Image (cartoon, rainbow, N blue to C red):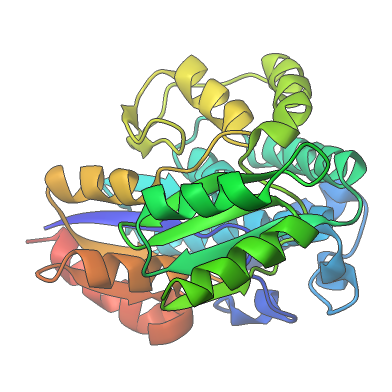
Length: 309
């Protein structure tokens, strides 16, 4: 049975998320490296007040994802594929060996700073469940304008779409979606307009910065955000990391590619269970676990058993 490790993105964070990590030497080493690289105690990043910062959220997610991966690696358990949602793609890229963890920390720090600087307030994201994308787009066309723009962002599932832009207009779109019968329409815990053209300047700046960072050929196939394809060329992964900031994440297509490649065990790295829930709903004959929901030891045991079959 093939195994995929999934790395969550912004919106999965919660105070104290680093305490979900297993207690082992591999995790300690990741935390120590992160603290030294960032010149900060990383446990100060995942507190409630610091997590109001996009930069701190994204760094915390990167650290948690890489630390959990290293804990599995220390037990000689490795996936056949990796994929990360939004900033989780950096964790996935570290797991493949494409980018060094220290370089990823610096790039994610820059990513968060640029996103906060571009839209410090009044912008964010929402999610709509149970509505066709075409109908949602018609609501966006009605309520969005140049002063208060809204865009389709991520396609997380056939019936789950995120939108991004002005919070004022997002609220109106969400209310319209509820009136049109959407199963759920709510604001996400993301305070920047990710994955839409408003962040094109961030993608451009990140592309320049990533150009200065050495990238290696991945040791594990990486499934990208932007085009939902298996990427084995380091330059393509670099481009995916930069451009996905301002482009929609095609997550449903990405997870479907994993399934089509034979993955039947999906394990979500901490924090949260969002990606696991999406995979469980989409692929009924697959086994789906999360470190947060099932615990590290259970995930490790099952992955180790499947790896030797």
